[in-house]
Length: 245
Image (cartoon, rainbow, N blue to C red; front, top):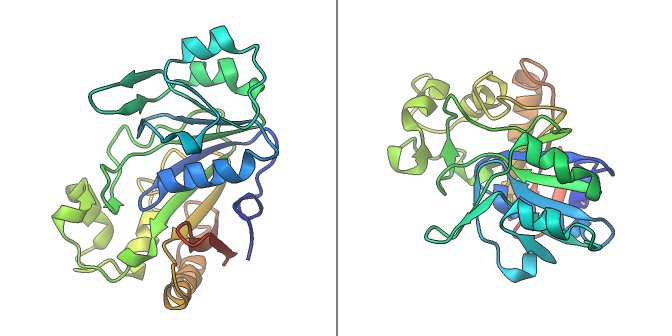
C-alpha cells in the first residue's frame, strides 16, 4: 500500500493534470491535502470546478489578479486559484497557460483538474477536450471500477454518441471497451503530456480490488504501450488505500 505521492512519484516542480471520470475532483483535493503538509501546493483547473469547502485549502483566490497583487505573502499549504468565479453556478473558471506560467514558480507542486464530465461516471471526449496545459509534467486518467460490467446507457455517459465508438457494439462496459478508452488517440489520454498514469478508482473492498487488478492485467497486455505508455494503479479515495498494479 502506498501514499498518493508515492503512487504518482510526485516531485518538486511537477505539474499534474487530472482527466477522466469517477473521482477527478476527489483525487485533486485528496492529493493536495496529502502534499500540503510539506509543500506549497497550487490547486487550479483548466475547465471549471465547484467552489471547494474551506477544509480543502489554506488560501483561495477566485480571481488570479488578486493573487498576483497578494503574492508576496508566504503561501504555505494549499492555495486555490482560478481566473474568475461564477456565483450563480458556484463554480471556479479555469486558468490559461499564460496564467499558470505567471504563478507556478511560487509553488512546489501544481495540481490541475483538466477535464469535465457533468458529474456522470463515463464520458467520451469532444474536439476541445481535455484542455491540458502545456507545462504539464504528469497526466493522471481516472476510471471508476464500479462501472465495469455496467450497461451502456445514455443517462450515465457524457457525450454518449462519442462513447459508443469505444464499445464496438458491446452492450456493457467490458475490458475491451476500457482498453479502447485507454489506447485510443481520442480517449482518456488525449492531449496528454509527460508521464502517464491510469488510476482505477472506487476499489472500495477486496472484491473490487481484485476486479481492478484483473482489469489492469488486461490493459497491460492489450492497451498500455500501444498509443500511450501508461502506468496503472488502483485504490479507493473513499477508503484512503492505494496500490500499484
